[in-house]
Length: 161
Image 1 (cartoon, one colour):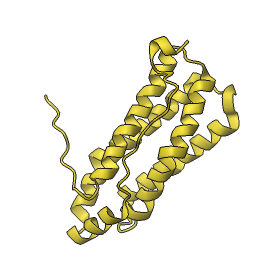
Image 2: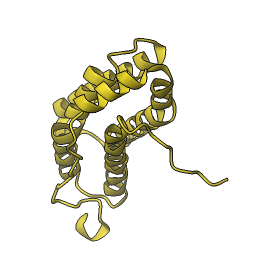
Image 3: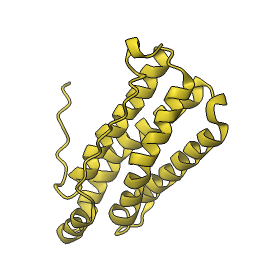
Image 4: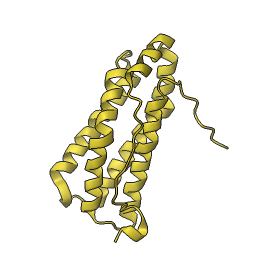
């Protein structure tokens, strides 16, 4: 069965594009571990990605996208954000002592969350929110696509050593 791209409301497509970068983040973590990149290199990237992507992305989703509708589907997304934030904080506290399992768990957690938002939450919001509400959200979300300019390509085999 062939998967077709999901048609997303034009007002939330910017957030959906950021999700692609989040999935790429997960892939990079997994590749870095697979190629035995040093944990300090990977953890430095994790911190970079939090500072340059996730913190802003979560804030925009919570302030603009989730605000108009308070139900169990939106609450699950908020709960996921909290779990991911706590996980990032734990990684920062544990620092370089952490094992590859922690990074894989983070990648799995982010991956599952993004897929939940794309497959369940966004269609739910597109159905429940009015056209006007979606337009307001679209105007509030910044139009800056994520640019991951991280230079240490630890996820590439030849660069992992």
